[in-house]
Length: 492
Image (cartoon, rainbow, N blue to C red; front, side, top):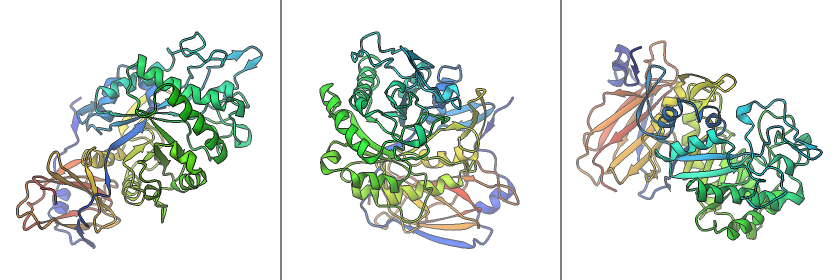
């Protein structure tokens, strides 16, 4: 089959919109506010579980790695896609035993778990803490690890190891699939053992797999009340106090193994930034000093008046370490990204699963049968952001809440990523006055709801006029995400 390219030819409707022939119902003047960056951008990322466990050792794995972790153009099922170039990978350190037994103890495997969501742990029984002993099996979880190695050969330079649940034998109900009634599941007597486990996995990854781990996170949505057995995935509730008890133990283990100073200790990956602020405020100053980086998920989905988490935790860096939703169009994704960047001020933004079903994935994939289908429009929306705003850029404040601006000094380019709402919209970009002439302007667009006169754009190159007297105007169809790159820009 002849490949269909993402820079598809312009239709009549496309030219109609790009030329600004339709009077926009909304006009926006966009200016850079001040000359200080909001944040120094470190990049985009995703979690590897569970898609990497499912497809990490298949013949398709290198191609999937190219799609997610490079800027190459990649043919997937006859469609050539622009690589997302993500440079942060989150590796899930598992706790499952695969239905193991320890004497009279039997692992309580959740019947709702499928193989892709049941990640095997490395410490088998807890009888020998020496990671070089036979009580540790370092041959497990090869598929997820193989995908991580492929990612490192591409653009990944940030690697975080995180836990969804401690090993099953440490938990009160002997399960990684949630606690009874969603309560704390890690036995207090195993707090130190869990810290030892996480630190040893990081140390082994560095020494034997040559994986440059940059951070370790022992929790995942620890205040969530939904981690109830039988869950369809690994999960473990940790109260604020329980988290505060584990963090010093993990720091102690990291110090003992020589990890501190090169591997950051991150916490706490709460489900929302509101919960993250609550947890941070609960921690004592002594516990806060043991943390190198703050992580939060943003499942509030651009909720109003997010807490100023980035400001609150400074000088520590903040990651949006997970976000996801079931809107395959990508419009919710765009709204969430710009909202998170300017309200929370993270240095890294991560999506949950790039391959998934039900609108959650950027590429439609079914873990239950291993099939991979087509890219969702969400994939192209992610490309508008990740290919324009790259690691090393400065995020700049603008006068419009739906416009993200970034300056990349290395390439002397100024990037805007922006979107229209339910009507067509005109954006007039007023560039810094200190520069008389600018280079070429390049525009790409993705329409999230094509049809009824709205063109079908999927990261499509759209003609635009030159920058004249420091200004350029772009008119978008309704609910369209676009990236505009201005070349030959000096720092202002």
